[in-house]
Length: 276
Image (cartoon, rainbow, N blue to C red; front, side, top):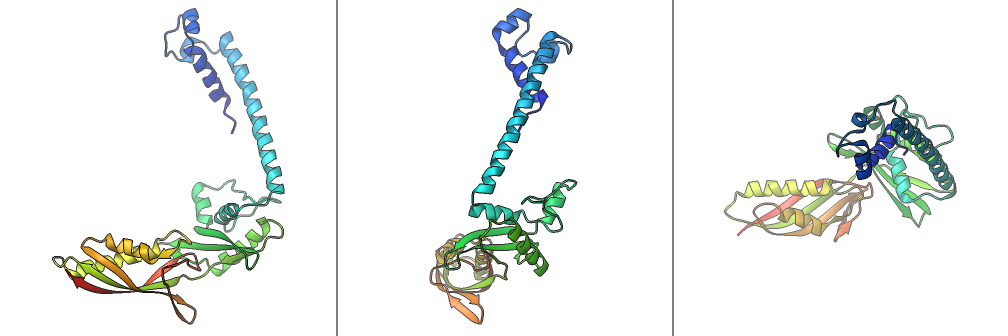
């Protein structure tokens, strides 16, 4: 990005005044500011202003050239999965795209306006080799946590992605309620502590682990045990059962599972407490 004329001029004059020969020639003490050494109408000030102006024009032309090259590359190169994720997170409700482009016209909008219009708060993009498509999992959020987009938001997101995507690329937007993970635990705890307090803290640790995984992050029984064993008073812990709600019932999780919706909710936590 091009610097301003003032910024360019300051970088030149600072370096000029730092030279020992210049300080001796003009009788300037080290650390003297340019404004204190030369008047606005001095030949030196005018010359450096002209040089800074020329460099400013050059930097602006260079920026324009870089933008043009990047635009040409964007038109010719297929986009990455990260690009699709970034574009999904950039989706805005109620704001039109600039004609024949994949960016929004945000003139007149404050940062708060822009953030409010971005309804997709979480997104992950993966390739589905079976369907020859890109799967995009999305979610929004409120004070209660992650949740699906509304039907209207979902439809508009699909329209937006179909406009900005590469030609010939199939997109599958996954916007759904999270499944619940329920676990049964065997816990050995310090018998000197109150059992109810330890059990309550374990329940909180389980909920925090399940519901705060990275978006589309993998749930693991070992990760859950790490969270439980971080609770004060827990000596040992085992997962005796872990299940995930699915349509029509539940499915067992033997070791690990990636959420279909991109995130989980915590279901029922059953704890068998043993004092030691």
